[in-house]
Amino acid sequence: MDPPHHDPGNHLSSTSHSAGNDQTADNPAPDHGNPPAPGRQPQYSGAYTMFPPKESLRREIQMVARQEEEALQRLKETRQVPSVHLNPERLGGEVTLAEARAKQSLDQRCSRLQKKLKKEDLDKRRRQEEEEKLQQWKAAQREKAEQLEEKNRQAEQRRREQLKFDHFRTNEGFLQRTERRAPGPVASSSATHTSSRSEAVESKQERSVRDVELERQRVNSAFLDKLEGRGRGMETEALREAVWEAEGPCVPAKDRGIEGSCSRGSLCPC
Image (cartoon, rainbow, N blue to C red; front, side):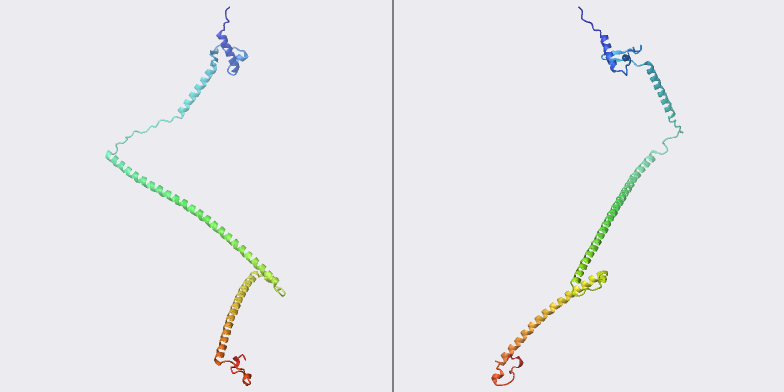
């Protein structure tokens, strides 16, 4: 019995039919069961099926391409630069070779000088710009320093005002406590003291300074008087001893039977 014979054409057609089901957009004919056009028979190559393009669509695309190419050529022709027509003239030969070389040498020397001058000008311009930037920076720093100095001055002024106020308040409290502690009736001119607090503070300071000076003078005078008293007492004792030694022992008048004082006079203790 012969084995079953497999036709390769049938196998390819089944493969192409399965591939056609996946590609519904490119080959919608197999899905609907419509046969392909006579000029578009599928070509099988292995596992792929190729359909030739439509001739009408191809001719239409080619015609549009030719029209666009012709339009591009016309646009290029309209934008083409026209030819330039100049009168013929002689080029060169107006000067000799020596004159041309001399002119070239002069131009070369002048070019060196021009380069040098240009470089100097650029350097000068650069230095000016740097100087301007430096001056601007200095001005900005100076302004910052002035602002800082003004800020410090205002802070110092506020500090002095606060210190003056505290000092005045302390003195005022001290004066009020002194007036409350002072014996006798309180002065009736409290409004005057309130209005002239600064004068009261100054007078109080002057009084305190004057009192301190008077106390110092009193202490010094007492000390000097004490020293002088000691010196005088010592001199008197020494004088008495000298007189007693010169006149001998003292004999009272009653012992001598004479009425009156001693012969030594008032210095004698008898």
